[in-house]
Image (cartoon, rainbow, N blue to C red):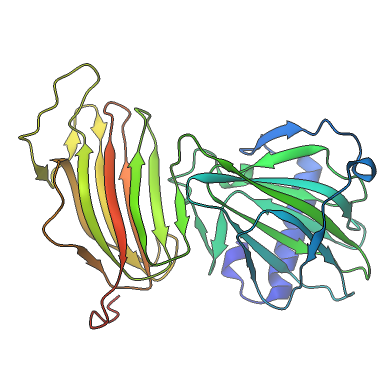
Length: 315
């Protein structure tokens, strides 16, 4: 509902209504990994030197450390986008919180990103429902937990209408032993590997640029545990089996969600050598998605290369 409204005032109203409803009926179990801080209350913890946030434009931060926001007294919706390296997760810790609930203030953590009213990772690629991926906070009681995302990105929505109120958070980037969903912030990224680790899950690598995809290795829907590896199978476009669906999908589109994207290529099978030419994804965003049934040990290796100058944009 909130994503269909374009004006800040409408979005603020939606966020506040959501908070009031959830506070009344309780929040669902969170998808965030939560651990308790063991160093005592916030006033004894001592935040490192902090960098100050503004609300003029959406902010992207890709460095760990402490960040502080102090309200200028204007009621508006602000956003902070956090991006860690692709093989890391984001750890978020509050060391100070003073946001008046009575004045309809709130800080909301999102396990993922919202861009142009679409969410990444999509509900189909994240193990938890959207209602469990939001964590709202207000008041003067600084949370004692540390929150960890499921991928390399996180987002904070915040409305702090009272002059002088605000919050301080500390961001840490931790190595992810089993990376799945990834957001790339550059148009050149070499040696990306997606694997399901034998699990039933969907993983997507998303780029906010047109790309050329150079495939270097594919083993999807072919290798079963303790079975011989059939290298003669090759790649194919018919990927359904009795046990499930294991496949690779290449998309191009105008955003990070499924509404504005188009399927360019779909395949499964085995290829142990580099493809003779790159696949061109020539719209504003590019994505590779690995869908896994959990019956196979799926692996795909590839490079994201910049689009060539004469490729143009075709959506």
